[in-house]
Image (cartoon, rainbow, N blue to C red):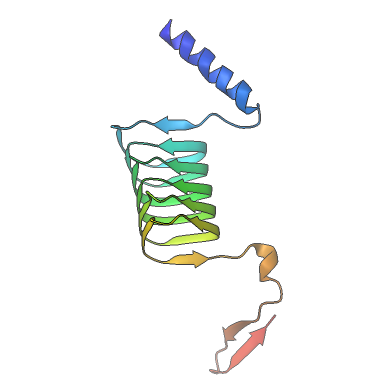
Amino acid sequence: MKNFVRKCSLKLAKIRRGSRRPVPSIVSAGAKIKGDILNADVIQIDGQLEGNIVCQELIIGTRGLITGKIQAKNLSIYGSLQGQAQADNVFLAASAHLLGDLCHQSLTVEPGAFIEGKCIHQPKAEENRGVVTPIRVASGYTQHRS
């Protein structure tokens, strides 16, 4: 019976959010996971995860801790991340604690967020047009291309 109620509540949540938006996978507070999560839609981490994550959207809750590498389209950090992250859109809440490097296209940081590492802006592919990049050639001369 509990399984039936659980399935019904998940379907109801999916209907409320719209059929196009997936229901998040949640790692609850107190849970500890070792391993990688790959090709996921929406994930919310409120516990601890040691491993790498590749997903569309990742939310690290206020009690969440991730140690590893992250690749996501949208990343919201309310808890702690120790490692590297690459995401298009990043939000760091006042309670966020980031130890590591962050590659992003868009970054929003609330006052009080802690960052120890590099924040590297990576422009979108369309923004790269017209940029002159130096190229080293065998003779030692620098040649430019656009």
